[in-house]
Length: 173
Image 1 (cartoon, one colour):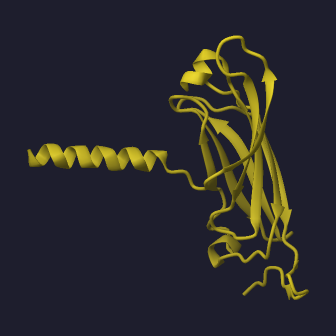
Image 2 (image 1 turned 180 degrees about the vertical axis):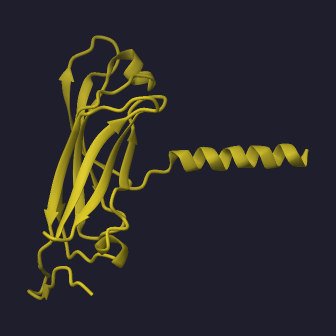
Image 3 (image 1 turned 30 degrees about the vertical axis):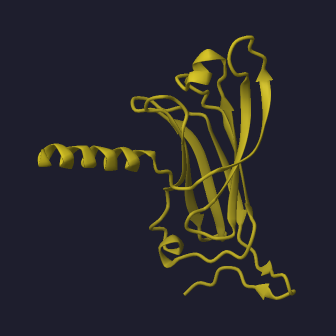
């Protein structure tokens, strides 16, 4: 009995770990693109997420969402098309790991786009020479990904606060 309980707990923990995303997205809006007589319409969904490691960096993703009966049941595979736009929304402070390039390619967003194995991901890079954050969105599958991708950049600049105080841009150590 104890082994069965331990096994069930382990399975539940692993299942929860697979469902956790690096950043939570907030739906900003959606538009219907195709009318379906039965089931939900095909849509384009716009979501926003903040970089989990860098306050003041926000990205917006627009992505296709398949409708119809399969879409309503959650078994449809969404198209790999996505667009990405990232902006500085506050003062940005970078950790030493990011400045030194040890966090390049770190996943900052993940969204499942099919019942099994396909997901939309956003990863981040830091271009130290130009003082720019670069975000790349792409879709992948267990066996084969998609060459469709999109990038967006944030040029890190000083930030003017509420009372007119200037928060400096990144300072190198």
